[in-house]
Length: 175
Image (cartoon, rainbow, N blue to C red; front, side, top):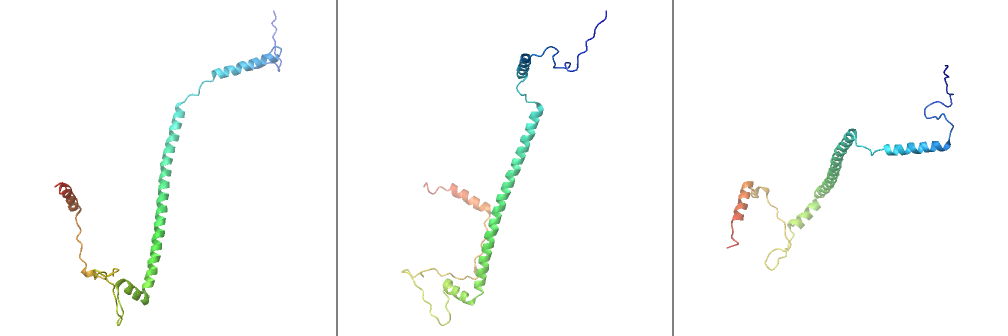
């Protein structure tokens, strides 16, 4: 018996191609079935080890960057404070330079000696207003010789601490 071999034509063979007569309704049901199968096969996304490791790396980077940014902002604030202190100090220096220039003028020095210390020029008479107790009205500053100033002996910290302990233990108010 001779077997007859059937060779399909080029247009009809291949995966996904039907060899039978084409029916438009059959294609749509196949597509709908395939879509339903893909939805049924679709599971919730699982968190893999790689995703967890990636999440941890990103979290560590965020923490390290956050601390770096915090340090940067603190340094910027400190720099701004230092710049304002420098500007204030420079303004004080300019004021002191102006005062130094004023004191290089003899007329200003004489005026300050009259106002602050009550000095008078030779031949002038000075008057001082007194209150009812005989004290001068308006304090007059006095110059002191730096060599005559009493020396201050520094007190050790433990002496101050012991005095406060003794004061706390002394109950004079309760008597």
